[in-house]
Every structure is written in structure tokens, then in C-alpha cells.
Image 1 (cartoon, rainbow, N blue to C red):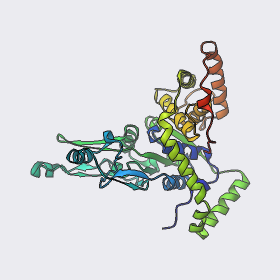
Image 2 (image 1 turned 135 degrees about the vertical axis):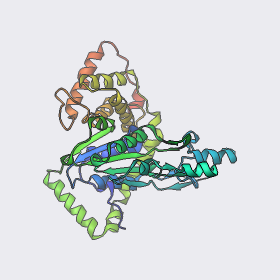
Image 3 (image 1 turned 60 degrees about the horizontal axis):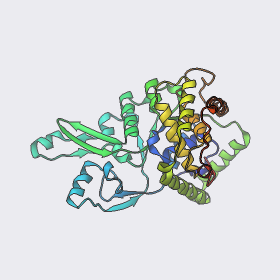
Image 4 (image 1 turned 90 degrees about the vertical axis):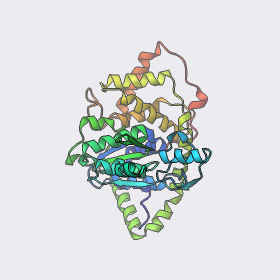
Length: 366
């Protein structure tokens, strides 16, 4: 099998790459839906992201890849093992998994099944793991997600949001962590997701073929070079791939320490309110994505630009009214709205944000 096409070698599509990176920094954001015509590097980007993600520590022998440093998230089997070993379990390191979910997947295939007959006859709890188990702490890729059964999509989105999978039958239950980067792709020409499901994807990006001639030339040159000698092409981009891996790992280490203040929350709430966005999911998504964006930029406090860049990814599939009723949310219009919100807030709060924490440590490349 030839090496995966490097993530950093993908030409253009900056919004798509940024949405993927933010979910890699914090999978709790809740996934990304990439909508676009064929041949726009959707599946290539998803596979490439999984290939460059940092390795993860897992409990040795655990079929769910539990995190040894987070006992509260362990599966039922790890809790039982830990009880016999003084709450200490050996660990190992593995690469980030890439799991491809087929369109024909059923609910049992996704969540796993409990063998009730064996439980009744022999008193043994046997759980046959599903896709959610294989995807834990990895990347779950769903191509043509709009053609997947709605109920299965609902299950995937629930797991992505809650980070846990619970299977219960006849009074018997089994629990395991299910924290993964959810990436769904689709071609809008083949039909859309129901609005209720669309809203549950945290971020959404609409992508198109590049119209700039030099970019199209670069795409041809890089693809031809990759096809001619995949290994040599991979080595050519290896340094940039390792740098990106390091940046994502560093961002993961600080994302929970990224701070925000009341003004940031007020800007987010005023922005979604002014755009007529239903519910409160968008507000929470923007905050999580803004913190991830700050962490990837090496900053320990959310800035207005982080909020704007997060909103650009969180609102395209949620905005229903007003001048931003488009397939894409224009970042310049968002900047104008935030500027107006700040003016409206200016008379009531003059407290500056700590300057030492907003200074960037490194440049955000996404």
C-alpha cells in the first residue's frame, strides 16, 4: 500500500483543513461535515489528517484503546481489570486509527452487540465491539453521509458529542469510551441531510474546485509527482508533516487551559442572536472551536479573531435569516458584526483582556 498523500501537500481548501485541525486539537467540538463536488480532496484530507496525528497512549490489551491517564473514561473491562490490579494498568503507544464507515452500516454494526444467550446460560457478559469501539481516540470517516440511515447518523453524532457508547439489553449493559474525530463528507447534488441532523454537525465547510490557474497547476504537479514515486513525495513533505504533528500535539496539551472571559461569551451570544440561529448548540461550538483555534496558535486566551474564525465554520449550516443566508459565511461580514457588537457593549464594559496571554507564541497556519 503506497504512503498516504501528505496533509500539508494539499493545495488550497484552507477552511476545510482548519476545520479538520480544530477537531484534531479537540474532538469534543463534535465533528465536521465537508460538502463539495467530486475531486475536491475531501477523502484525501481526512485520510491525510489521520496519518499525521500524534501517537496516543492506550491501555495495553484493551480492545477499545482506553486512555490510561483518564480512569473516569475507561471501558467496563478496564475497570474490572483495574479492580484486580490496584487501579494500575500497563500501557503502550499506537498510531491514530482511521476507520471508514460503509454507507450500508447497520445500528448493530456501529454500536456493537451483547450476547444475551451466553449471559443467560453461562452468566458471562460477552460484548462484540462495533465501529464506535474501533474508532475510539481515532478518526471516523463517513463518506456520502447523506446516504446513511438517519438513525445511524444520529447515533454517530450522539457518540461524538458525549464521548461514550452504552449498550443495554435485557438488564445487561456494557460501556466503553467513544471519543473520535468525526468527519462526514457528501456531494450536495446527491441530496442533503435533514436539518435536524445537519445542525448536529459542529462545523461545516462547503468546498469547490479551485479556480486559480497557478493553484490548479500545483495540484496537477503534486499529484503527478506523488503517482510517480509516492515514497519520495512523502519524504519531500516529511519535515512539514512532523511540524504539523508537533503543533497539534502542543495544542492538545494546552487547549483545556485556554481562557475566555465574559466579554467573549457576550460576543458569541450576540453574534448568534443577531443571525437568528436556533438553539444554543452553535454558541457552545463556537466557544470550543475558538479555544482550539487559540491553542493551535499557541495562545492561552481566546481573541476576537478566534471567535470570528470559529463562527465562520460553525454557522454556514445554521444561519437561516439575514444577509448571511448563503452556503458560506463571509468572514468580513462576521468581522463587521463583531465590531458593531463591541460598539454596543463598549459603554458597559471597559475591562481590557490580559495582554500577556493574548500575545501569540506562534503563527496559526491553518
